[in-house]
Image (cartoon, rainbow over all chains, first blue to last red; front, side, top):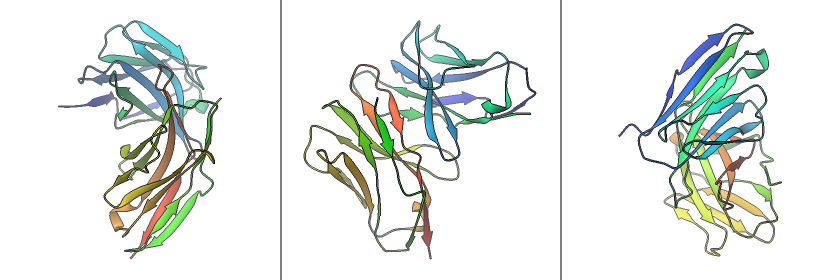
Length: 112
Length: 115
Protein backbone atom coordinates (compact mmCIF):
# COMPACT_ATOMS: atom_id res chain seq x y z
CA UNK A 1 0.00 0.00 0.00
CA UNK A 2 1.86 3.07 -1.26
CA UNK A 3 -0.42 5.70 0.36
CA UNK A 4 0.24 9.18 -1.02
CA UNK A 5 3.12 9.45 -3.48
CA UNK A 6 4.58 12.70 -4.79
CA UNK A 7 6.68 12.98 -7.91
CA UNK A 8 9.37 14.31 -8.08
CA UNK A 9 10.97 14.52 -4.64
CA UNK A 10 13.45 17.24 -5.62
CA UNK A 11 13.61 19.69 -8.50
CA UNK A 12 15.56 22.77 -9.46
CA UNK A 13 13.94 25.13 -11.95
CA UNK A 14 15.11 28.28 -13.65
CA UNK A 15 12.95 31.38 -13.38
CA UNK A 16 10.26 31.27 -16.04
CA UNK A 17 10.28 27.52 -16.54
CA UNK A 18 7.18 25.46 -16.07
CA UNK A 19 6.64 22.15 -14.34
CA UNK A 20 3.98 19.85 -12.93
CA UNK A 21 4.02 18.09 -9.59
CA UNK A 22 2.11 14.85 -9.42
CA UNK A 23 0.30 13.54 -6.37
CA UNK A 24 -1.07 10.01 -6.54
CA UNK A 25 -3.04 8.21 -3.85
CA UNK A 26 -4.14 4.60 -3.94
CA UNK A 27 -6.57 4.75 -0.99
CA UNK A 28 -9.66 5.93 -2.94
CA UNK A 29 -9.73 9.14 -0.93
CA UNK A 30 -12.26 11.75 -1.94
CA UNK A 31 -10.46 14.92 -0.85
CA UNK A 32 -7.01 16.07 -1.95
CA UNK A 33 -4.89 19.11 -1.11
CA UNK A 34 -1.69 20.90 -2.05
CA UNK A 35 0.19 22.79 0.66
CA UNK A 36 3.46 24.67 0.64
CA UNK A 37 5.78 24.82 3.63
CA UNK A 38 8.07 27.77 4.17
CA UNK A 39 10.36 28.44 7.16
CA UNK A 40 8.51 30.14 9.98
CA UNK A 41 5.17 29.97 8.18
CA UNK A 42 3.92 26.45 8.67
CA UNK A 43 1.94 24.81 5.88
CA UNK A 44 -0.35 26.94 3.76
CA UNK A 45 -3.08 25.66 1.47
CA UNK A 46 -2.59 26.34 -2.24
CA UNK A 47 -5.49 24.51 -3.89
CA UNK A 48 -7.75 21.64 -2.99
CA UNK A 49 -10.28 19.25 -4.48
CA UNK A 50 -13.39 17.76 -2.92
CA UNK A 51 -13.85 15.22 -5.69
CA UNK A 52 -12.89 14.14 -9.18
CA UNK A 53 -13.25 16.98 -11.65
CA UNK A 54 -13.50 19.69 -8.98
CA UNK A 55 -10.89 22.13 -7.70
CA UNK A 56 -10.90 25.23 -5.53
CA UNK A 57 -8.48 27.92 -4.40
CA UNK A 58 -6.86 27.87 -1.01
CA UNK A 59 -5.01 30.54 0.89
CA UNK A 60 -2.10 31.10 -1.54
CA UNK A 61 -3.24 30.10 -5.06
CA UNK A 62 -1.51 32.76 -7.17
CA UNK A 63 0.98 31.37 -9.68
CA UNK A 64 -0.36 27.82 -9.46
CA UNK A 65 -2.95 25.78 -11.30
CA UNK A 66 -4.34 22.34 -10.50
CA UNK A 67 -6.29 19.57 -12.12
CA UNK A 68 -8.03 16.44 -10.88
CA UNK A 69 -9.09 14.52 -13.94
CA UNK A 70 -8.82 11.19 -12.12
CA UNK A 71 -9.85 10.59 -8.53
CA UNK A 72 -6.47 9.20 -7.56
CA UNK A 73 -4.35 12.01 -9.04
CA UNK A 74 -4.02 15.68 -8.17
CA UNK A 75 -1.63 17.73 -10.30
CA UNK A 76 -0.06 21.03 -9.32
CA UNK A 77 1.30 23.17 -12.12
CA UNK A 78 3.63 26.14 -12.18
CA UNK A 79 3.33 27.91 -15.54
CA UNK A 80 6.18 30.38 -15.03
CA UNK A 81 8.25 29.62 -11.96
CA UNK A 82 9.44 32.47 -9.74
CA UNK A 83 12.03 32.44 -6.91
CA UNK A 84 9.17 33.11 -4.47
CA UNK A 85 7.87 29.64 -5.28
CA UNK A 86 10.95 28.02 -3.80
CA UNK A 87 9.42 25.86 -1.10
CA UNK A 88 8.59 22.37 0.06
CA UNK A 89 5.30 21.18 -1.38
CA UNK A 90 3.07 18.64 0.32
CA UNK A 91 0.13 16.76 -1.05
CA UNK A 92 -2.47 15.32 1.30
CA UNK A 93 -5.63 13.28 0.99
CA UNK A 94 -8.60 12.62 3.26
CA UNK A 95 -11.18 9.85 2.91
CA UNK A 96 -14.88 10.58 2.92
CA UNK A 97 -16.29 10.31 6.43
CA UNK A 98 -12.96 10.89 8.12
CA UNK A 99 -10.86 13.89 9.05
CA UNK A 100 -7.31 12.56 9.23
CA UNK A 101 -5.08 13.82 6.43
CA UNK A 102 -2.52 11.48 4.90
CA UNK A 103 0.51 13.29 3.58
CA UNK A 104 2.99 12.58 0.84
CA UNK A 105 6.70 12.79 1.52
CA UNK A 106 7.03 16.29 0.12
CA UNK A 107 8.74 17.84 -2.90
CA UNK A 108 11.58 20.28 -2.42
CA UNK A 109 11.46 22.82 -5.26
CA UNK A 110 14.14 25.43 -5.80
CA UNK A 111 13.67 28.19 -8.36
CA UNK A 112 16.87 29.98 -9.31
CA UNK B 1 -11.37 33.16 8.98
CA UNK B 2 -9.79 30.60 11.25
CA UNK B 3 -6.30 31.12 12.60
CA UNK B 4 -3.88 28.94 14.55
CA UNK B 5 -1.10 30.38 16.69
CA UNK B 6 1.93 28.58 18.09
CA UNK B 7 3.84 31.10 20.17
CA UNK B 8 6.88 28.93 20.94
CA UNK B 9 9.23 28.70 17.94
CA UNK B 10 11.54 26.39 19.85
CA UNK B 11 11.44 24.32 23.04
CA UNK B 12 13.95 22.08 24.79
CA UNK B 13 13.38 19.21 27.19
CA UNK B 14 15.63 16.81 29.02
CA UNK B 15 15.26 13.16 28.13
CA UNK B 16 12.62 11.46 30.36
CA UNK B 17 11.13 14.81 31.37
CA UNK B 18 7.76 16.31 30.41
CA UNK B 19 7.20 19.20 28.02
CA UNK B 20 4.09 21.09 26.96
CA UNK B 21 3.70 22.75 23.57
CA UNK B 22 1.15 25.54 23.30
CA UNK B 23 -1.43 26.21 20.61
CA UNK B 24 -4.29 28.66 20.44
CA UNK B 25 -6.81 29.04 17.65
CA UNK B 26 -9.64 31.26 16.61
CA UNK B 27 -12.90 30.21 14.98
CA UNK B 28 -16.57 31.06 15.03
CA UNK B 29 -17.54 27.45 14.35
CA UNK B 30 -18.69 25.07 17.06
CA UNK B 31 -17.81 21.83 15.28
CA UNK B 32 -14.24 21.19 14.19
CA UNK B 33 -11.22 19.01 14.77
CA UNK B 34 -7.80 19.83 16.14
CA UNK B 35 -4.60 17.96 15.41
CA UNK B 36 -0.96 17.76 16.38
CA UNK B 37 1.41 16.62 13.65
CA UNK B 38 5.06 15.70 14.07
CA UNK B 39 7.58 16.41 11.33
CA UNK B 40 10.98 14.77 11.90
CA UNK B 41 14.02 15.59 9.74
CA UNK B 42 12.73 13.08 7.17
CA UNK B 43 10.05 15.69 6.38
CA UNK B 44 7.21 13.17 6.71
CA UNK B 45 4.08 14.54 8.40
CA UNK B 46 2.99 12.13 11.15
CA UNK B 47 -0.30 12.45 13.03
CA UNK B 48 0.34 12.48 16.76
CA UNK B 49 -3.10 13.07 18.19
CA UNK B 50 -6.56 14.24 17.17
CA UNK B 51 -9.30 15.95 19.18
CA UNK B 52 -12.95 16.38 18.24
CA UNK B 53 -14.30 19.72 19.42
CA UNK B 54 -17.59 18.25 20.62
CA UNK B 55 -15.80 15.86 22.97
CA UNK B 56 -14.99 17.25 26.39
CA UNK B 57 -12.60 14.44 27.21
CA UNK B 58 -9.00 15.18 26.32
CA UNK B 59 -7.41 12.85 23.78
CA UNK B 60 -4.50 10.64 24.81
CA UNK B 61 -2.12 8.50 22.77
CA UNK B 62 0.48 6.70 24.88
CA UNK B 63 2.94 9.39 26.08
CA UNK B 64 1.10 12.16 24.26
CA UNK B 65 -1.92 13.94 25.68
CA UNK B 66 -3.71 17.20 25.05
CA UNK B 67 -5.28 19.84 27.23
CA UNK B 68 -8.26 21.04 25.22
CA UNK B 69 -9.95 24.17 26.54
CA UNK B 70 -12.74 24.95 24.09
CA UNK B 71 -13.92 28.18 25.68
CA UNK B 72 -10.38 29.52 25.81
CA UNK B 73 -9.63 28.12 22.32
CA UNK B 74 -6.51 26.47 23.59
CA UNK B 75 -5.08 23.10 22.55
CA UNK B 76 -1.74 22.23 24.16
CA UNK B 77 0.24 19.03 23.68
CA UNK B 78 1.95 17.34 26.60
CA UNK B 79 4.74 14.87 25.94
CA UNK B 80 5.63 12.72 28.92
CA UNK B 81 8.84 10.73 29.40
CA UNK B 82 10.45 12.51 26.46
CA UNK B 83 12.63 10.41 24.19
CA UNK B 84 15.37 11.37 21.74
CA UNK B 85 13.07 10.27 18.93
CA UNK B 86 10.57 12.93 19.91
CA UNK B 87 12.88 15.63 18.57
CA UNK B 88 11.05 17.17 15.61
CA UNK B 89 8.96 20.08 14.43
CA UNK B 90 5.43 19.94 15.84
CA UNK B 91 2.50 21.55 14.08
CA UNK B 92 -0.88 22.31 15.54
CA UNK B 93 -3.69 22.24 12.97
CA UNK B 94 -7.36 23.15 12.82
CA UNK B 95 -9.63 21.08 10.56
CA UNK B 96 -12.97 22.43 9.46
CA UNK B 97 -16.17 20.42 9.33
CA UNK B 98 -17.79 22.51 6.61
CA UNK B 99 -17.46 19.90 3.89
CA UNK B 100 -14.00 20.77 2.64
CA UNK B 101 -11.94 19.45 5.58
CA UNK B 102 -9.26 22.07 4.97
CA UNK B 103 -6.52 22.32 7.53
CA UNK B 104 -5.13 25.56 8.95
CA UNK B 105 -1.66 25.06 10.39
CA UNK B 106 0.27 26.94 13.01
CA UNK B 107 3.83 28.02 12.35
CA UNK B 108 5.29 25.11 14.29
CA UNK B 109 7.41 24.50 17.38
CA UNK B 110 10.81 22.87 17.06
CA UNK B 111 11.36 20.48 19.96
CA UNK B 112 14.88 19.56 21.01
CA UNK B 113 15.43 16.64 23.36
CA UNK B 114 18.61 16.81 25.41
CA UNK B 115 20.36 13.62 26.48
